[in-house]
Length: 210
View 1 (cartoon, rainbow, N blue to C red):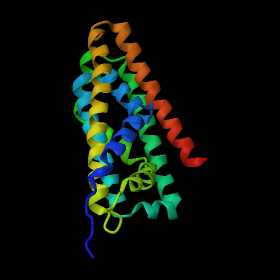
View 2: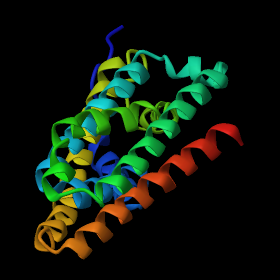
View 3: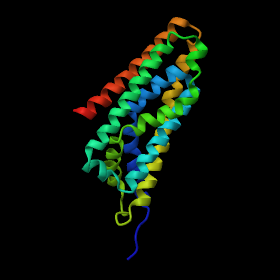
View 4: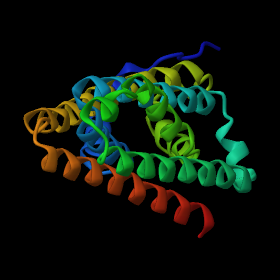
């Protein structure tokens, strides 16, 4: 008996569902706004690719069926989330302090933005649980051997997510660039970014300990 490895007929419905998902405000969107305001368009680009790299890890793990592990051992995911909340709290603090620094100092760490985007996503294992629930709805006829189908769907989701993150980050970066030399405005943007990181840290921590 032959297997259907990839079913392309599900793509229109899948892309439509992903578009709705990406348009809804969420942690990635807030993170990209904060990063664009803090580090500009170049930093936003690196953050977007960092987010995509983090998502790719969970896409592969989902395709391999390891989402079952986090469902069976929820405490493991909670530990990771607490670590992610601590990291976001650290970003909030350093970003707040950067608002009081000279312009050059506040933009010197742009090379680390990729790592920030990656860490923020990898610190939220519930992303994999979402994928484990969402992606199998679009297996179509590829139910016997679903790995390639899941990888294909995950890749499409990543590409669409990357485009959305780049657009959001570029928009926020453009706002930053327009007020870059205005000291008060720059400090306000830095503190707004710090506030967003702080909110994300609080949400992630509350989700882990509830």
